[in-house]
Length: 79
Figure 1 (cartoon, rainbow, N blue to C red):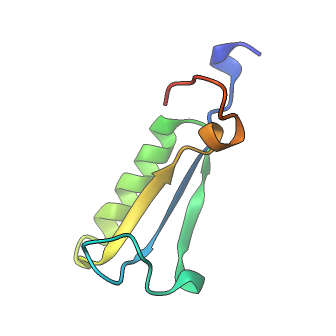
Figure 2: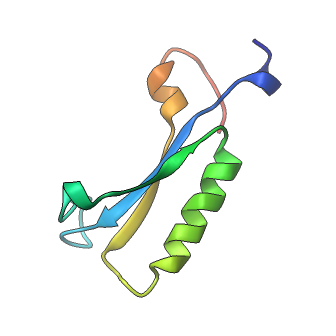
């Protein structure tokens, strides 16, 4: 599969943290699963949008998980 056709899947999710000093969610059932995106650029756009929507809540955090690195840990891939 050529690099330009390769899916580099990214998960965007977030939730309220117990404390600002660590990543421990208050309510795992209440996590906001924003979506899975085919590349970092689109995942970043979704992350940024959600982060901006929740800027008034200091405990709310959104993350980008590089799923492609978990699915193919031996493969060196950018993004």
